[in-house]
Image 1: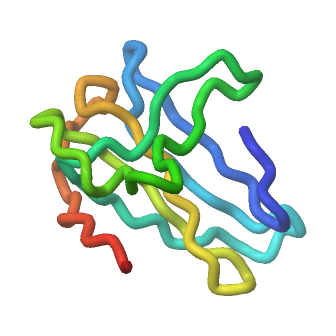
Image 2: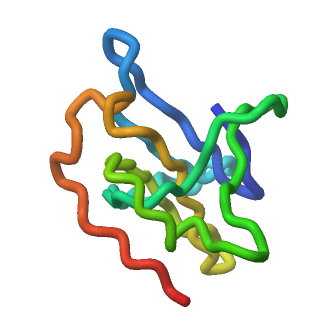
Length: 108
């Protein structure tokens, strides 16, 4: 469980794979909708930081411009300020693959 501003983000795992990501208001005001995206662009990478994930884009190259031929699945929610947060995972870490996922199109 991770707290981001007013929201708690939770992950449900089944046999070691991510089955669901959910968001809920930390003040008990209900659950937030979560969208499931898919893309073949590299959106995140594992690093030596405490939380283990960081953005892969740099000022010289956007992550979305890198084609890798590997599918990534992202789970997103929108906070109370209208900011969208997306948590990206490699396809093989997802229990149901890209079922229900829509193609991610980044805004430039």
